[in-house]
Length: 117
Length: 143
Image 1 (cartoon, each protein chain N blue to C red):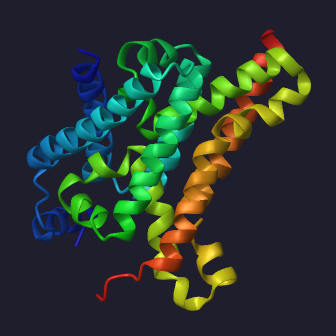
Image 2 (cartoon, each protein chain N blue to C red):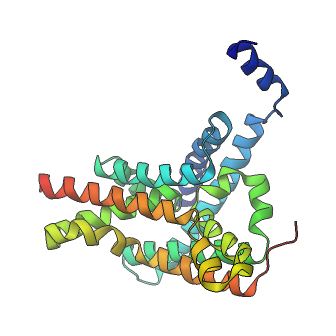
Image 3 (tube, each protein chain N blue to C red):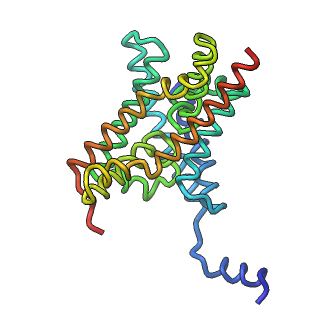
């Protein structure tokens, strides 16, 4: 059942992105930025957390989930550390994903050649 | 020619983007990638990891897979069909890091690869961090 929920919610979040690509002139980079910021704001106003509880990876794997992770991390950091947490919470919570992206991107660049165009 | 007429002519000449088909493909690919993520999440949870760690490991796994498939030239082929279905999941973020890293390797490791791998990921991290600071300020004020 949780697979079905993840499939549907994740699919719908991607459909929104597809409509934005086809119906507006937003470039992929802008859409990714928009998703992350939207995820953070939706988490702030308390909308995204219920969606994560409902859909699991369907809500955390799309980039809105990256924004959710940022906002959630900063929330907990503020609760624990007060003012300092405003600045440390977001990047601390997302550090794992960013570090793996940098490591794997670096290795990909070292060991794989781009296809000739 | 008025702007209106020009716009209509551009519209008629532009290649038709089959929105219906694109939406179905985005749904299937995006849903599929999230289902893979759910499988990893369930697996990590079944190993007794707390929810938070399991979720982080899932993101890291998906990023790894996205970069690996990019390095193997598989992800770009998927993206041709999947559209936003392969862009919006975090595997698309990994693709956006790995792809320019491969592309700009020829321009050097430091100013080529290391700099250019953030060409898309950079704005995402900058805007994401700013949004998180904004959220932090809000949480701090209402606390």
